Length: 254
Image: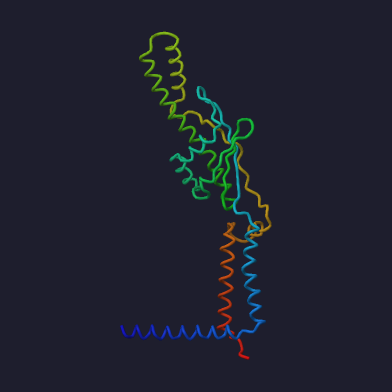
């Protein structure tokens, strides 16, 4: 135990001596040398800050959806219907199996109405390739989710129509129920989807010069970090280099 205490004491003494040497070197720095370090620090802070502010934080990709009626059910153009499908367990499973899970957040998926009863489904991601892959994987899964939702709706309506038919007296209503039952039974286990995806989304274009520069670098496209954190990292690098300079090349005393 005493050896550990002595070693810790020697270490504290060395650290204290080193710190005193750095403080002494900082006090004796020349004005020209200090100005040079200030200029270098400003460059290391403002450079990353300006560069990352010149980049796009997110990239968007979109696909058109075409709602269609599946008689006796009408077409659904309400964006809220499709937003609810994003919680479908089978949809989430298929997105994982296709390697699209995690490329973008489902919270960043939007549905908006377009002309002619169409819908536009879009997503924002921090890289063009991620937005491109995610939205093109999601579009057919949305169509599959409408198919599963319709199958559940058909099964419920079929059971209700059969129950009503059992209690209905002969007449027009009974004939109507028989026709409805035949139509619902014709769907089978897999009814059609209630929406048709349009053409695949193109890859988002890089509009800003800073993003094009990053894209030309080797490796995958690097998403934009926070400009504030980039500036802070530059400041820490400048401070570290300043301390190394004081230790490696201490200022001469006048």
